[in-house]
Amino acid sequence: MNELTDFIDKVYREPYSLFRNNCIHKSLKIRARAEELGERVDLICCLSMVPVRNWHNLRIIKFHVYTEINGRKVDVSLDPEHEAKYCKNSQKKPIMPVNVSRLKRKIGKYLNPATYQRVLKGSLKKVD
Image 1: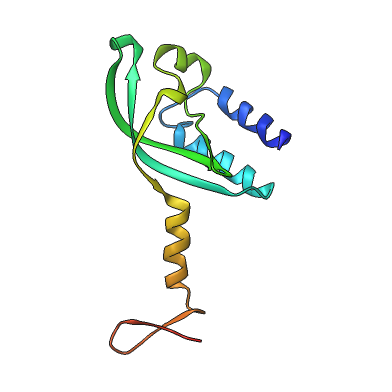
Image 2: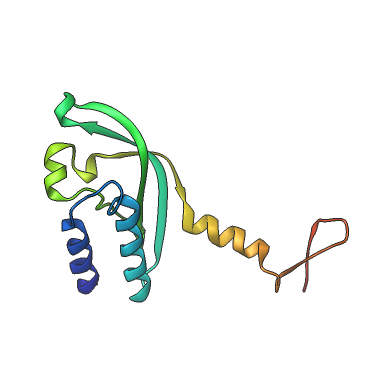
């Protein structure tokens, strides 16, 4: 776990860039590393309410992605310099979070040809 914590801190300190190193890129890096180490990782996609300090804490709603490792939220989208300008990562309030990893597992379960086969009528039938 110490190795993962050090990696998360390293990713957190990487400079934020809207196009090259945003919340999606950072979350996917952490997810890949945690899966290598055998941790249970979920990728969460949501709308997020973000207070912006420079605009008198005006709240904006934007698309956001973060990871959950063993049920613990890990949000490292903004680096320390950007946190000082906008808001801390912990202050972002998720709205309508969707666990993309769980959704992928559920859909993949129903589309797995080893488990299900198509019937002539177009419905799915479980094969024992």
